[in-house]
Image (cartoon, rainbow, N blue to C red; front, side):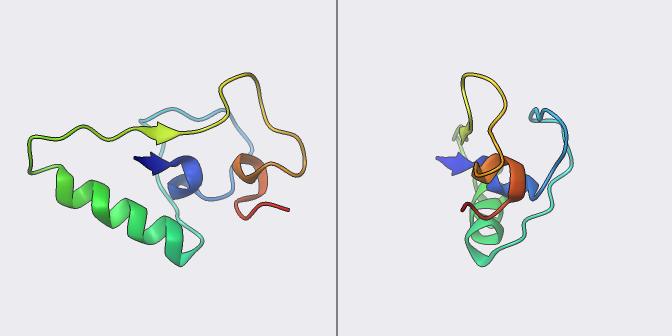
Length: 66
């Protein structure tokens, strides 16, 4: 499992084709793990907000959480 933190702070709705821009060590290591798994028989899930856009305190909005 990965997270939407690999995208960094964004002001738009995201999908898997968006460019990545990790802002923390956590996000950078998640992205490194994804790249390693590209060569394996694996599937990566990026978890995010399922029901609408996050508010001002959501990690998907500001990249770091409250």
